[in-house]
Amino acid sequence: MVITRRDALNLIGKSTLMLPLGALSMGAGQFSPQIQPFQQPFRIPPVLNPVHSDSTGDYYEITMQQSQVEMLPGLSTKIWGYNGMTPGPTIRAQRGRQSIVRFINNLPESMVIHLHGMASLPQYDGYAEDFVPFGYYKDYIYPNNRAATLWYHDHALHQTSRHVYMGLAGMYIIEDDLELNLPLPKGDYDIPLIIQDKRFDSDGSLIFDDRRQRGLYGDIMLVNGVPYPRMEVANRKYRFRILNAGTSRTCQLQLSTKDDLIIIASDAGLLSAPVRTKNLRIGVAERYEFIIDFSKYPIGTQIVLQNPIFSSNIDSDNRTQQVMRFDVVRQESDDSDIPNTLRPVQIIPVSSAVRARTFRFGRGNQLWQINNRTWDKNRVDANPSVGDVEIWNLVNTGGEWVHPVHIHLVDLQMIDRNGLPPLPYERGWKDVFLVESGQTVRVIAKYGPHAGKYMMHCHNLVHEDHDMMTQFEVGSGGANPITTAKAKPLPVPPF
Ligand SMILES: [Cu+2]
Image: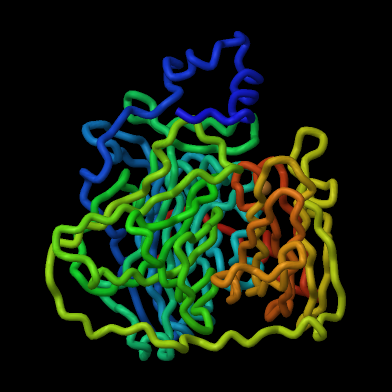
């Protein structure tokens, strides 16, 4: 068992008794049931079929509902899922062809749906106060204007961490011809890996403990909703699309063989060229895509995807240090390849920026704040014009906390972190930036294409909820995100 100093302080701080540290493991409900890793078969969320397609686009329908699922063997867990499953079904879209997704709320609370990474109009971006109440539905229009790995998840004001933790998250993949024409692994060899950490009571129910709004750290790692799955692979190359859909945890992924992960894409699409790394750091809401080439391993080889301790997490034991296992079980031919050039990323010149702004992420008044302020839908903290290039300084004012900062609407590039170049795999299009204690991360983007109000927040969902979120407004005259396309009561009309 590993108990950090901060962990001990937190636990002491919230208990009425000064328990000796040795008593922690006996605390009722403190730890999830022990389960044997690598016993559960790997699973891929189903791809959602449109209910209707026509010249305007593809129409989908997703119902948010409660269900009971078996996550831990032999135990039943109540979840809130898109179509009753977690993660939700994957949507696969083609660039340039829009999707219209009807989200129906059969859950007892108001929901908001944000498609993370999409340049949606303000009224379809999942603004935190644009609620879909119980018994209502809303049709979200997504333009699908870039090829990337996105995800949809709840974004309800002050409730996001609990809603996502209960299961409201799913992947959304957009492809285009350039990408499909590359010889990368495709089809059955293009695999989503949605990583989450959760904590379970002995009866299988989820424990939501945000440690007095500091962060939620599970002790069981799930991939696509399965704890420590075992994936049987052929001895060939696979493309993995990894999403950290946890609440607070920053992961560091590496292979037990110490071989390279070959990174081909960051949050918002392909890198210019593949990047090899033995250690991939991925904060909440970040996406990376990588190739693992299993051809060098003899049949029978077992390779564990590991997650060594990252100091800013709060860990009470070491069970999160492994994630899943790849078992090489069969021989297969492989006509895929990893091209040296993927999709050239056009660097936005620093000299093109018309101004710079600074946002300080810190703690004050027992809340998480940005520039000493909390969320207020009536306040705008930045107002770039449509088409302006701006540099934003994202500052973590200290404490032992990482803030994965997410800026809606735009794709951005990192200029530097404390004056040093970004990690090689961060040198692409991104929309989440890990800002560690005392760091300043400079990011650059061209604001647009839409006018309107969009959010920026910490994607440690507990920080976001309490209350590290603000908004910027691009240009003027953009659609009102709350009143332009309001949710409507059931029943739903046909498309
Ligand atoms: Cu944060």
